[in-house]
Image (tube, rainbow, N blue to C red; front, side):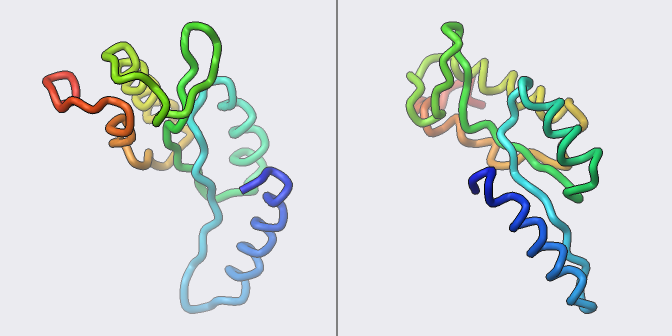
Length: 118
């Protein structure tokens, strides 16, 4: 979803929730975990009560060169597996997200199932 669509999504979600007495409808987002965005997620989404929850995934990693790379385009190297794992664990430990999603995305770039992948 584009950032410009956020307010419309939230309004539609809240309207749907208010009009449905049979179930409780929650509004939330799946966000990319990136330590650079944690404060923004907290201040603009969670603390303002715009959303009921956030969940996270790791779709991009920032390498030593500062370049953001989509998971699927990473080389099949242990250093990237380690960075993916460390980033995912940091998301879990952040306390901002209700849960993490698709922890298996490393399989898009780390092709060998070895002791490190276990």
